[in-house]
Image 1: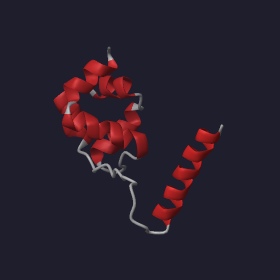
Image 2 (image 1 turned 90 degrees about the vertical axis):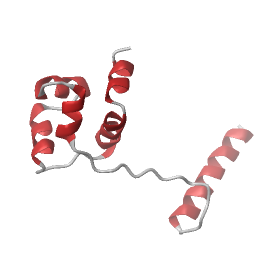
Image 3 (image 1 turned 135 degrees about the vertical axis):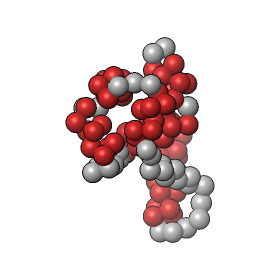
Length: 95
């Protein structure tokens, strides 16, 4: 249990330092905004097919494509991966 506690303590101290503005080893990834319609075009799927493949509703996809809403959180991260390598992502997803 000693090693587990030390790992947790180390992570907590790094988080506290980061929150306080202290430079450290914390790496932050901020996903870029994406053009969902362009990604879907690159993947070559219909709205219905794209929504089903990525586990989102067609309604949400349409909002993203029109620009009234933007993908957030894990969806934005996944779409950033799709923007860089759409065919590779599909290959990974379909095993």
